[in-house]
Length: 328
Ligand code: UT7
Image (spheres, rainbow, N blue to C red):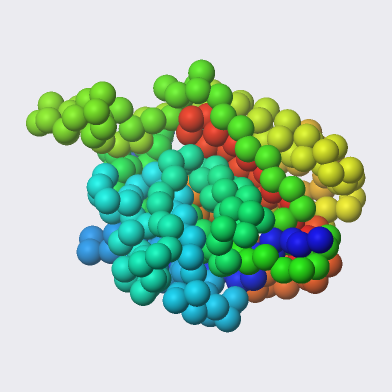
């Protein structure tokens, strides 16, 4: 029986670091408030001339090197992003060209917000199993600083820029790699987290710019409650479906939005916090990039060893959510 494995992982964060102290000079906030309400201490911000695709390319190069796979061998490229270089064409086509991925490859973006990396993982997993593709590159890449309202203290303290990537391939060995994946969405909560302008509902006008319509708008408390609920549900369903108990999971890699969300999830699942990988203190919420960035750090720091079972779990605007179980 064949399996699909994560053959390599890579990530990239821009050079510039913006601390809570820096933010306290920009809006009416304090380091104490941001740390106690979110756990975030600093985030990385891309340079003006760095776009989503530039971050994606660097993460992809690291993942390709880690997997010892050439760009010329990739035949499926999926980029999950909420902050593409431009509405048209896809950031995937821009990244394809920059990396030198061949013209016969299938390249597209998906919009699933912070759950985007897990959406990309499931799509690539299914496609590789059909034998239609041989090697997939999936990337979560965000320049959220370009859609952040830097005058809104309720959102601007939360987000950062980053990219993370993974190379997936099929191997003839049962029981390793992606054991299972589950996704979901609940469109009832569309207005809890959204960018109102810039699409066909509200095209760009001087008024939409004046009204800050091109930035992220969020009902923080509502998102918080939904996040804990859906992540717990999808994590439980995943474990039940694949007959896995919490003690068999060596590491949970949750979407990095707020330490209090992760603590609530750990409490509800009755799992100790030391099983949850956390790096949001240094990067903030980088949307679709949080999981591959955390995965890369977890692997490099020795938190994931061969044979380990990890659970990745995410939620995001939409409301989208997902989970994936991976045996290394
Ligand atoms: O990937 C998904 C993305 N989004 C999320 O995951 C967000 C989920 N939600 C959250 O993480 C939290 O709801 C926040 C961190 C956004 C906010 O924390 P909270 O404990 O829910 O605070 P709150 O929104 O209830 O605000 C409490 C107070 C308010 O003042 P009043 O009305 O009590 O006087 C806010 O105006 O804190 C005030 N406040 C701030 N004060 C200082 C809001 N933002 C700030 C700030 N600095 N940056």
